[in-house]
Amino acid sequence: MSDQSTPSSETLIATAKAFFKVFDALDPSTIEHVQTDSYKHQMAPASLGLPAIFTKQTFAEHLGRLGGALSNFPMTLIKTYANPTLSQVTIWAKSAPIFRENLKDGNPGDWNIKNEYIWVLTMDKSGRKVDEVLEFLDSKTTELLMPLVFRALGNKAKIDGTPETGPQ
Image 1 (cartoon, one colour):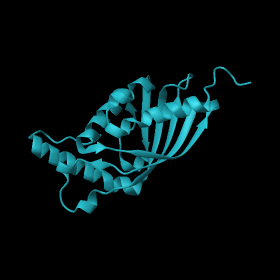
Image 2 (spheres, rainbow, N blue to C red):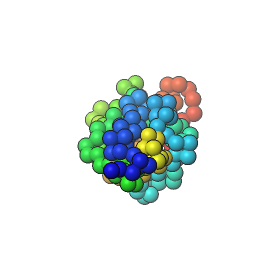
Image 3 (cartoon, rainbow, N blue to C red):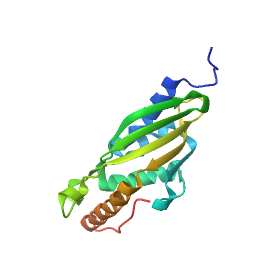
Image 4 (tube, helix red, strand yellow):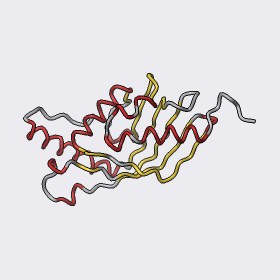
């Protein structure tokens, strides 16, 4: 007999999959329904110099900035591990971000980046909302990706005639 306050593995995995749909269009409104109001998102390792912790609002802003450079950021879930006792899902994922064609410059091959991640999503007691995310990035590849995002945003700013903003 399972504890009624413990979400099922199926519920946790369904919530995680709903969360990952945000990367298809980089539209924060696609995950608002699966984020708690106290949502926290941390990226590691710290050596990458990324913001310490995103809130629900600052993560939405981050996605919006990424969406300025990328048309989408498709994530492929390689392995998914649910832990109902901790209301967590750990995911090994890979991605190949797709930059907006009009923002690319230089060698076309430079823009083909593939990255890997380990995500730990902690859900609320229902298992239907993500409360906390710990995202481990492949630091070697991320160090190649970040300058491309900045370059694309710089190219966008030139096209739009607006100030350049980075993907904090």
